[in-house]
Structure formats: structure tokens, C-alpha cells
Image (tube, rainbow, N blue to C red; front, top):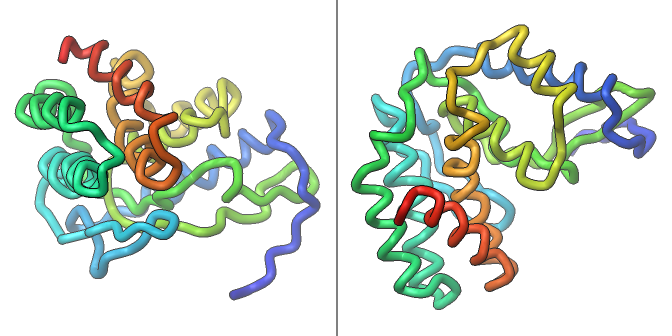
Length: 202
């Protein structure tokens, strides 16, 4: 592992602008198929990446349902919530969009994986790489407040977002990392799952 020189600085608006530039460039990296050549990890948990021609079925089967099923099997996700997630999966094409192309994603982009030096990004570390829709990555950055308005203003100037991302799709995509946290840290994250499903009338 290479050492990345950083000063432990906070995420300021100038850092957010630099992050937006770097992520827009990463997301502009076109790949042929969704998924990846091999499976990866998100934290300590396996993350399956079968190469797929379409994004929405990939997210449904290999992100949302996969993580929900593992959480149910381990006893961290109640069956009642799992059944509601299954109902969402049946209609997920109504909510999510297919991107123009598969983008290379970091896959685990939160504050702890962002290194700063002199008000710029020194590096993004501990990736959970795969190819997918940039929206799932952008949603993850909002889950713990990693990036905010300055980041999104700079990002959309480079890669515009389709309407409805902030209003709904961001929360829907964050079901995946929330289920990761349910498995790792327990029932304290179930309320987030409940709120998102309730918003969708499920």
C-alpha cells in the first residue's frame, strides 16, 4: 500500500470543488458493462459484481436484494422490512434511470475515505470498485454529510444530473449502504430503511 501524504484537514468548500472535479473525471471513464471483472468488498462484506448489460437490474439484484437477503439471513433485518424491500424491487424500474454508459465508481465514498492536503484532495482510499450509475456514488456522499452544496454545484456544472435525484433517487440508492450498516452495526440503522420505504408508500 502506498503512503498518501495528507494533513488531516477538514472538507471545506475548496476541497469539495476539487472532489467534484476528480469524481466527474472518474465517472466520465466509460466501461462496456456494469459490474466488474471480479467481486470486491465494501468494508469487510463481499460485494458481487457480475458483469451486466443494464444498470437497474444490476442494482436491484446485486446491491439491494443481495444485501437485504444477507441481512435477513443473519437476523439483522426483520422479515417485515425484507418483504417491503422485495416489493420495492418488483417496481424499481419506476424509480431508477439507466445511465448513458457504465461509469467507473469508487464505491465507498464517505468522509473516512477522503484524505485532504492543503485544501485539496490528497486521495480517495479504501475503494469498493465497480462500474455503475454515478448517482449511487453521489448519494453515498450525502449519507453522512461528506459533501454538500459546494460539491454538487461544481459536479453538475461538469456532469448534469437528471431531475429527481435529490428528491427521491438519492434516498433510494442509500438503501444499499444503509443495509451494509445494518449488517455491520445493527438495528440503529433500521429506521433509515423504514423511512425510505414509507416515502415510497411501501
